[in-house]
Image 1 (cartoon, rainbow, N blue to C red):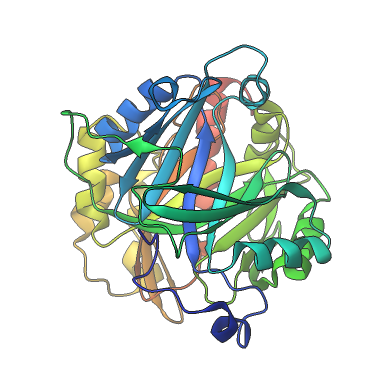
Image 2 (cartoon, rainbow, N blue to C red; image 1 turned 180 degrees about the vertical axis):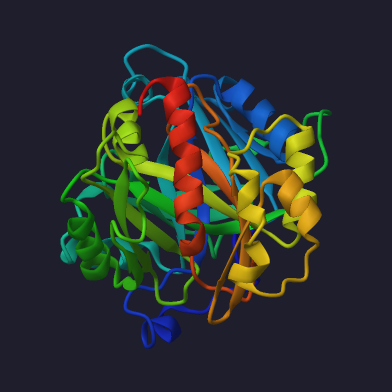
Length: 378
């Protein structure tokens, strides 16, 4: 089961044009307080479908994981079954958090060895695991905070998910909401650490910097941040990396770092082909979104030019629009999906645009500040 594309080129063919070939995002694993209830939430509220399970009934006694899928997006939701586990320790520290961004590769051993040779810290060496559906090879390296990357080689594996997991097919299912794939994942790091991790991705994984934003681009009356966007060679994996910038009050990045207790993934941007329909479906299932002032829409068409969509549903739903030289995009951001003001989702539809909504930053961050003020953390 291929995560992002229909066929995988051989490593030797890809290396010629890409210094660190990645075929896409394989899955994202979140450590959560209650994996069963988290799976129910993602299925009910966001339209994910049940895929696989690992826990007591499959022979695992320390953790329980549910895997849910929507088109090319796979989320692994993991909780501890026993006290004193590493999963429990990290969840106690960070709350519900993205632990692993797994990257689909054609050769996990090559990816791991190359990353370590270039300075990455090893978490686990390449290891093969097998079942009746074939063999999968995986290896892990450390990145910012307690986040890890896993290299997943599955060209000789045809099972539902991974060896050790069993198919999960409960009677309860909901309709998908139109989410297609992960567009990008945004990380928050501490003051002065952004360039360290920009350089790390460039050196270790041959990522290139697509764009950068400083505090003049991303600032409000009270807070500011800086960001650089890193992308792998084929553009399928993109990591904007944020750090706080000095401001009059506590920025959203500082709030995240305080409640998350260190760096981590701030939000996951997921793509759709019809943002209006997707957002209506999510709203009707109880997902709450950040809202910008209604005045944002009074001059929207003057700022971004002609668009295909009717302005009325965009205004009603709070969907933002921005344009670059390649086209325009539509985006909206959920409120945090767990108790701590940390992880949230972005819903994005690209109509040619390759940028990240720079024109919306001020309105968006003012909306986040209003939520911070309600929480008493601004």
